[in-house]
Image 1 (cartoon, rainbow over the protein chains, first blue to last red):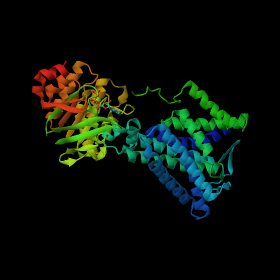
Image 2: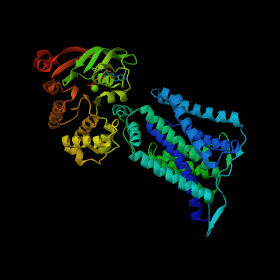
Image 3: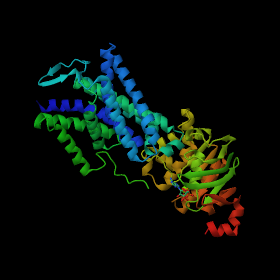
Image 4: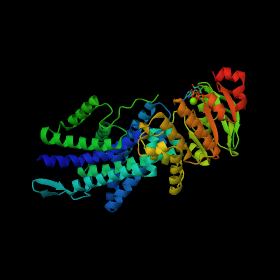
Length: 291
Length: 233
Ligand SMILES: Nc1ncnc2c1ncn2[C@@H]1O[C@H](COP(=O)(O)OP(=O)(O)OP(=O)(O)O)[C@@H](O)[C@H]1O
Ligand SMILES: [Mg+2]
């Protein structure tokens, strides 16, 4: 396969990692928590789409909207029920709780749907279109376009809107934000809602690219997206986007030129390399801890 | 305007504020002075709702506020210039001011307030799109004050606004505090710079390890031999 072909494949998966990475980074930015359950929202997005289409025969657009809404509400509920009571507890308690929430969701879906992988329905025609020696499918085009549009929308939202600015203010200083009259709880809920929404879309696009779903399917893309967020500088939105694309492209090139088995190793190798050169990630500032 | 009645505040097992009572009348400048760790910041945080009283009551304009959420307290008319400024360093000067007007939904009014803040602090206007964290300490303090004014507070809480500033800037900040007060805002000022604080305040309370140990007319305290020895060096 040609260089350009590998690059396009890399951007395809990379844009999915970027969407998912945004949720990790935004949540970390606002409550300094690695939300381990975020990867499971990917799986929920895929399963809810699957159930809506197969069991309830709704149109595709409606299945997608239902999946997004349920994931969005789940994200808010996870924060309210599991994380909010621990907001002033030691960091480690919330971290362990996040792992617990993740295991709970995975096993809940395992209980309901069983562990057998199921084929994900075809949402977009996967037949590749040939452009000279290039093979591009509608799946790739839709994934990249949707992801980039969502990222632009998020960027504008965070930079320009009042709620977006409040999110940045809360990320910097909860107390000072409250003194401005910002409702910190609402702002945190909105952050979880947006992150979960992006993860739902990411999950649907991921299942469209790799059309087989199981209750533990969120782990690998979740982990890679998390690595992408750390790579770009955790808490920094453009960092998550760049990190996602780097991960996707590195994975695609390794698969194409070296070996498929090595892809994951190379991807994590890049993480170790970047962090040893710049521990706060590509866009991270080496800020001094406030005393 | 503000009545604090026998409040007790704890940090876990630490009893930080012990039976403190004081009041701030409409239009006054009242100052709380005391050494490091006396409990001044704790009291201001409790008024703003960031900390809770264990017992006692705080009333603002005759409404109890000690169980009200911080964002609601701001809406009732209390703004707070926190210790150490706590401006949003990754946001621009303009965005910081907009955050100060977060609870106001009238865009035109917000823009008018921004103009008013710029008139008071022309240096902020020159730096409108600069990231707040890259400004000097004095400029950041001006921004913190301007940001608090954006909500048009009836009562302004100020926690050590002179901290870390050169003497000439300290004088400027104190002049501005008097201007803000003259324009109709009541002020509760916390200071370690007791000399300056007493010279502009109407009344003062002296705090020692969480208790009010002395209160009175600011000018009288300024002349009091014991106060001079203990707090004015
Ligand atoms: N988060 C906290 N946890 C435990 N104790 C605290 C906390 N914050 C303050 N204290 C304690 O409460 C007491 C009052 O502190 P506070 O910050 O209110 O003092 P202050 O008068 O504002 O001092 P300064 O002039 O140094 O700002 C001190 O003994 C302090 O150690
Ligand atoms: Mg203090």
